[in-house]
Length: 461
Image (cartoon, rainbow, N blue to C red; front, side):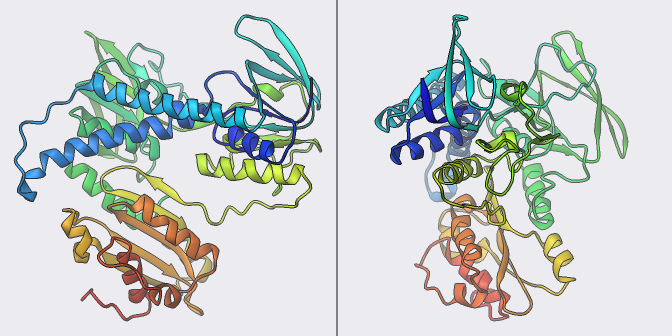
């Protein structure tokens, strides 16, 4: 069978590209060796957020008394939480399958390997093989968790994020190696649901890609919630003793040993490049090399998503998928990586887009403007019982053009969309401040931070 476009990988990059290509009347094949929706839908974004919501709900019930509501003691039913998560995942994966069918996409359930630049060999779970050809191919094979070769990393009870989302029992204690987004989110979930949680990060701070002011404040909040966080610390060994795991790690204060039921390795992800091993595709350590049009060094082969190492975020993969299809169909669509929202689902949430304060100071030689507005001064935030966090806006010195927005607080991951649009449209702080925001809303905090950039704060001393 010959196709206009064949896509290897059915994650948020691959399936979005397939649906869009189908809408454009291309003859499309999608090859996926596991579940449609990829890591994001099955072992990442969606199941994580389902668990986050369960954790947040437990938190809200515990604090209901301050709203005049008395609730009985909160009981965590881990099996019911897992069942709810699976129901959500199954609903969405069926939805993806139906969308692919509705748009004429032929789906192959097997493992793909490129034999040459137009020929793909599909190996089914039965061992049977089939060969298809395509004029254009999009590699969207995603990534897998990185395993750091620490002595003891292969012991029973040492898990990755994949296993952490589907444990049969809620562990009493857990040590997490890695203080990036994955480690912090899972740490928040388990700590909130009752697991004694410790995070060990090798770098001097958690969430190293986030604005320093945001990550420092979030760390204080997480530690106040009960999570023990060690930075500038390196795990040396993991040992098994009496059904417990003993993790030894070096800290600035000396060697520490912590006993836990589980050890979660959350040290990042690596690209899956096995499908293209037979071809001479240019690669770096971070993944397949692509140009600004998502093209590899082989003219008719494109790559998108985690496998490119550009940005391991589902929404980036989806956007790359759309652009790759547009370019295959004759448009010249460059990828713009400047405006990429980043979200962290804890309580409070954190979200950012554009330059951090450190990046802006490097670019503009400290000659920048910064405005802030705390949620404790927001009427809507107070009605929700949310007093922590703030909105921070960074602008350039000449035109007050918005360079970066960083939010720590309620619904930060929703509020960041306005900031992303503002930066995309080269909006100034004045234009944002002059945009009428509904009252009372959390979004007013963004407007108020804009006023603060201009030196004209309204509801802030």
